[in-house]
Length: 81
Image 1 (cartoon, rainbow, N blue to C red):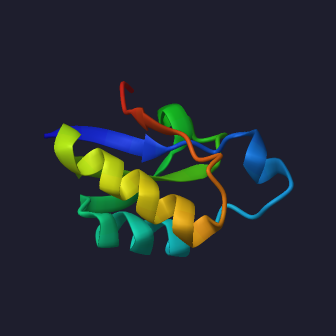
Image 2: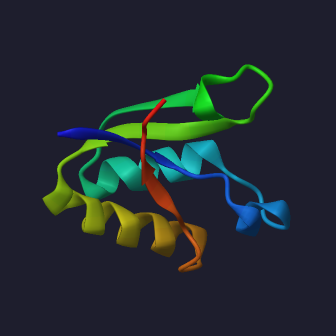
């Protein structure tokens, strides 16, 4: 089990990063311990959704978030901070 986050990518420059919707989609896809954290652990960065997942559930989470947000331009990265 690893820790991941849904990146606040350039797609969200023109669309809202709805933390509540993304968190709900992550849970629906199989993510656990869903939380909000400041990106990169820096207080001057926006909050992003973080979660635990296994490599096998990561694809289902990605699809769930894509469907909820309505785009395939979703980036999920391993949390390394």
